[in-house]
View 1 (tube, rainbow, N blue to C red):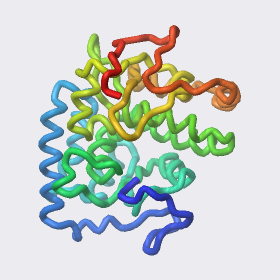
View 2: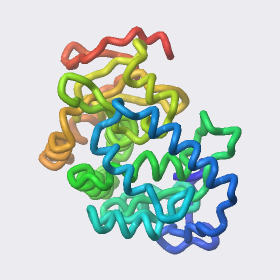
View 3: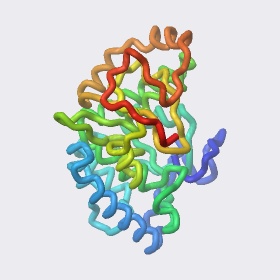
Length: 284
């Protein structure tokens, strides 16, 4: 996570052995706080009626006693009281083992920097707005909080099986770009969607992407794109069901089975798919 797209081999100067660094909240400028406030207000308004209600409830976690960018110490105290999670600052992208270890111990790693005012609508690398606004509200939801911890524990196991790429797809299509059924409608919950003004509309309203029922094996076979909006979104029935499927799955034989299965390109539909909406795929 963070501004640097290159993962270093060792913690950079000033970072602890687990790659954490002080947030240095007092060092943020008035302009940086103003960017957060603008993004928070705009995105909160955009998400009304579009995001899962648990996310809206979790937004209260981000309303701090001090203005602007949340202070991770205060935020962590609130989150700890709710679900036992903390938010820790890191200087950039961290190695897989470090990332999984933090999640397995209920620590969410977040970048410290915030995008510039001229980057409001697009930023390739995740900043503090994506990491905190996008992820933290659902960490206050007990079942989703358990899922994130289970994912971290699963990541440590996946490393032993050489299956990081498979598990990364699960994170991408749930934690970052997942949709959920709410009654007869679909709602947003993935952090990559809810922190993006454009994708918050695209994921639900645009006719281009496919919206497909979640299937663990299918998701782990499906490639994804990092340079544009998604061609597929996978729809879960509930956070309880997502947690149940991942906890009950025996991943070792699943990884062995997937090793011989071809990858599925984004935009491809299978006969076995549960299709909520068949996209035009015009936006590719």
